Image 1 (cartoon, one colour):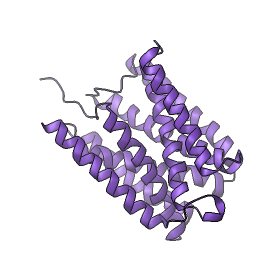
Image 2 (cartoon, helix red, strand yellow):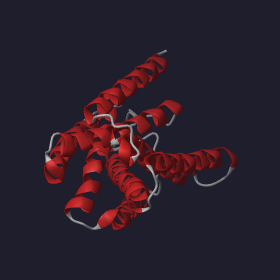
Image 3 (cartoon, helix red, strand yellow):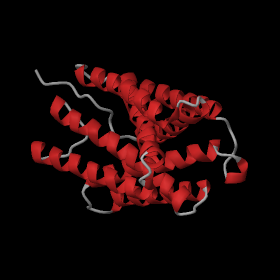
Length: 244
């Protein structure tokens, strides 16, 4: 009997939920570390603990469970926020060097994945080996996207709106290349996956940062609640369409 697929299909709703998941990861991570005053070390330990539980359940599952899969995606974006902030603000290595470390880690995971499987296919995934590589790559890419987005706004001097527009522009270019070029589709997937993260992160910062710093001044609690509501709405519509 053929093993069941374990991951979501790459559709428009996938990318919409991915962007909202990254925004949710940014606002929820900041809510834990700053609003609730847990700090970056405690925030990293808490979010990584939750993520490990979710990933264990995801990998052990015998088929694709949309709620579990997307909970794990949100878990990687939230933990990715804490990893990036911990590297910059606790270890003091900065967002630029943090991005270098994380892109090196992502390249290593993808290299090991390709060496083991002779492929980087992201859909369908039916075996535990490729699935573990997939989730490792997702965590590195979401952490990298956070670090790069913060580099744009904190180090490169862009406003949160400008940072969101730059990363959205990159996503648009990648989407265009998907339709008009013969560039490897797996490469384009990971480029889009990485850059949806800083887009969502800078959009999350735009919602929550003070007005004098270029943000809209919403609390991280309200921004998280609104983003979660939007995510649940799109998730429900996508699931209904899949069942029809």
